[in-house]
Length: 331
Image 1 (cartoon, rainbow, N blue to C red):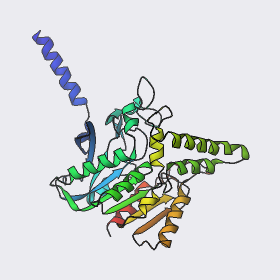
Image 2: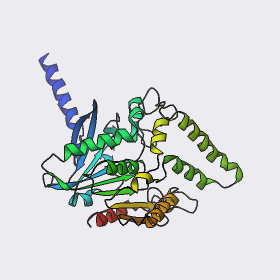
Image 3: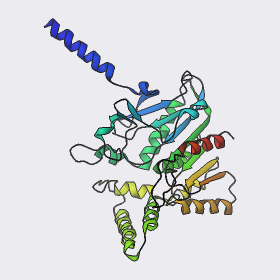
Image 4: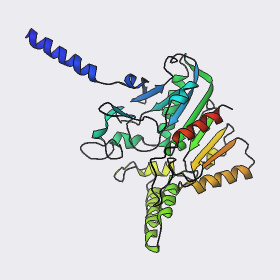
């Protein structure tokens, strides 16, 4: 009995030693309770400067139930779409997990686009879709910021909030709601709302009269969304409520902001014309707090397009974009 106990103890210790934690990948990991939910928060700091007083750079990622830490043996897929090291020179970089999506996941267990799906339904977890709403994310993120700014290593003098794609809407609402936010970075967003981004993508693919049916289907979907705007039914993926709430045009609250705002987007993104429209409006309204970085010939994730209109993943531009963020936020 004693031998078996020692063997089991040895095996358990060996397995524990093999289990990687966020610390193994250079992150501080905090678990914060919010409305009964356990929220995973990752903080990336410059090694050796974890307790150095610096402001927060709070990044809101895009859509889909994608785990933050995706592993494949010794390989780690990037937590951020960019290399985070340069940002940590001046900031503590923060990112928050999606609700009810595990923090650390073997990539081989995920869908082809890294989505975490329920094994029984092959759909995102219901607790995720019920919370996949801008109001939930904004309130949760502001709660986390309030907690973090009480920590001794966090400066309150500056707070940069950045969001990409769906995250841009969340970031913009955070800036509207919270006077602690000093700088907003709105990247690859759609100032006229999600439904217009969906319509824009469909219009961009139209090559003949028959293809317009895809755009018409978006109008039918939008009518159903409006008719069921409070429904959390997730049989189509995102709930109607999520689509409706994310489709409220961010331009309505972006133009009310007084803090410095950086709008950045690729000119080949389907939402580029709407960002150009926002630019026109800021000029018309004489807004001096907006800066626009339009990346010529790049798409939604800042890749150039090949001759057949597909992203050229061999040309990675995210780090150039983030360098521009840092230069802008330094002023």
